[in-house]
Image (cartoon, rainbow, N blue to C red; front, side):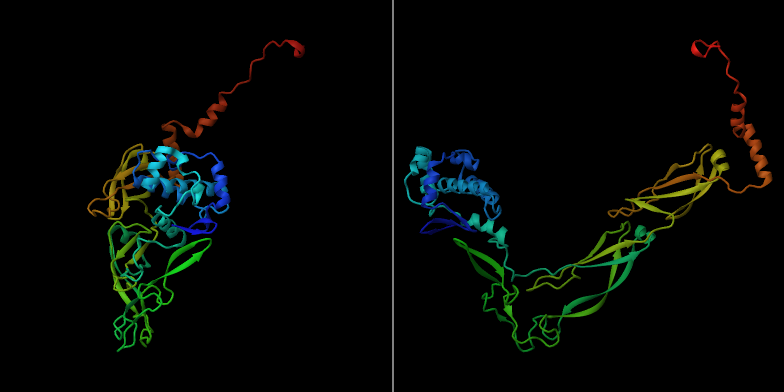
Length: 412
């Protein structure tokens, strides 16, 4: 929507279009093809032309590119092209005669008349983005869902694996029994806001070489469309009373640290008849001294003796299901990983489907040995490779290097 003034046409949002002097300069410049300017085909329909112009107008509008002369120039060029191609008669003339069809006329850009061009919906969208207005948005005095409330609960590692029920206590807003949520003194009722006429929105005018209608929430009624003259003494006009409530939270098996449980309709009350918000309970899982979790798998380490590692044998492994016996194979090396299938964490979708438990077998070296144990270990070593004397055997094999007949300056 353009506003006509004595100096020419003015675009919404503070962009001054070319006047008489600017029109002469524009005529002197070499004009690009209008279809090329908008980036559309010559057979493009009205919807395609409008869509192309809207994208360019939003991209190059001066209010979105303050101080950018090149952007302002492209905005003017696109607006001029749209003013012609959006009008069926002007488009027909341009297709037949080109730019020559409009030379010498009266109007805004280069002699063009913008009165027939439909800029209202396009600039309505653009300025809705810029100033917070919006033509298509729902009125703020309509039913609106209440805000969500967030809290947290701490559980153990095992409780996260198998699920649990917890009771939390928090403050919730309940409808005032005296005024039944209206906020008005018993015997009275809220009145229609005189400032916005009950719409919950007011329209302000912003002028800068033009006029812009800006939609804002009514400051008098805060968007409700109602004004309470005599407030309820119990809730002080809010319509709600804060009470401490105990709520049961069912935590599903398989939940992980940082995930939340949503409890419907336990949040803040809605406005104008809207539903309550939700309660989001964040779960904080405590650390376990043995187990670590990654996704639905559990990881732990189990120490084994040198004898079991060499000869094989049974070891006891702690799992979330209790202790299990695992048979270690002979010759197992330290840091060997084994899998206990189905001993991990249940999935949230189906608690019957579980991850795995991965166990790292760590061979422990004894720190204190008796004299008898040391002697037996030396005998074992001698029978299996004599590793204790390996370094001595290498040193014994060393001999003096043979002397050769030297030549050159070192020869005597």
